[in-house]
Image 1 (tube, rainbow, N blue to C red):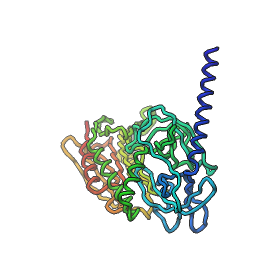
Image 2: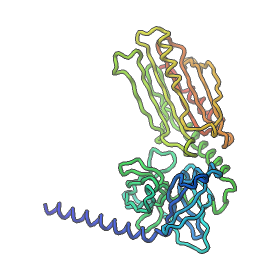
Image 3: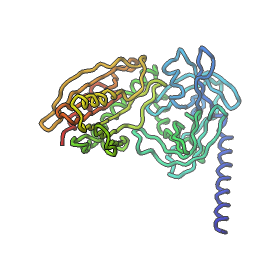
Image 4: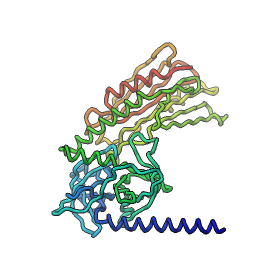
Length: 417
């Protein structure tokens, strides 16, 4: 009993110390914290809010790209402003963005140097106590303690796993260590005391690039970043091991990369099903946010093996067609963002042991980002009467060269066992 009592006293003492340190950090940094507001010009009201923090004496403020994405895409519809800890409001100018890491730099007008956050020079130690600052639910600035848990291994672009409550409105706020140095930027939450942060080195890179070569055009900057990221992503996928796995009597490829997650399902436990259906699905569990109706850099692969159970050829073909028709794009996009799909149909046999496939290859072009496309591929086997394989993939935001290279490897990797 005594040991339990001592343990409880220690826990209370540690919680009290953490709370006291959090309060001290907040008081010290509050003048350099802001609420970032996206204002609809027509109504004059807030369209969205986030958080931001000053990173230079001359008024540069860091936030998330998604907080200001409305202005970046529709500057005639929106404006950006800040609200400081004294209740003062004023306009902000968008200076630079990093859409891949969800970062942006905005600037306020000021007549004298102001206090700002220092960026850390070292990565936190796993288990280190950190403090997330931001403006949740438009209720005012708060500080939330949490723990550094390293990088999320399933992410293609680095994200820190943070044990702490990142609530709506805290996006773009800083996460600091005990020395009040920024080690990350709030970006997302998964609930249950689990959040994700952009590592501080991504902000350092954006700030340094801005200092050396300020972008002349935000749209061109985004286009360049999308091209670089898709080239890196597709190249990594093609160089990864494509492990062949059995699905019914077919062999299908599974990309062995930590950021590609795969799942399986079947109706094998349902004896009254009119056709056996076995599904394997793999996807990149992240994307790049452009605006509320448009995201990109998605990857999906899906394989469905179907076997008839005492069905006529016509009824089996009908079920088969239903599965094919369900395939669709892997990302959100509006008519303002992309063209209509243009499709090419063909009958393909890649070799003696390969599956004879009716292939549908479709592309749609990005209207605002030149030479980038969404790709939708569907391959339906046609060489067996009572069984079939439907192969499907989607890529978003890729070049024509990358799309063709991926398609070629995908088709050549599928065969009957």
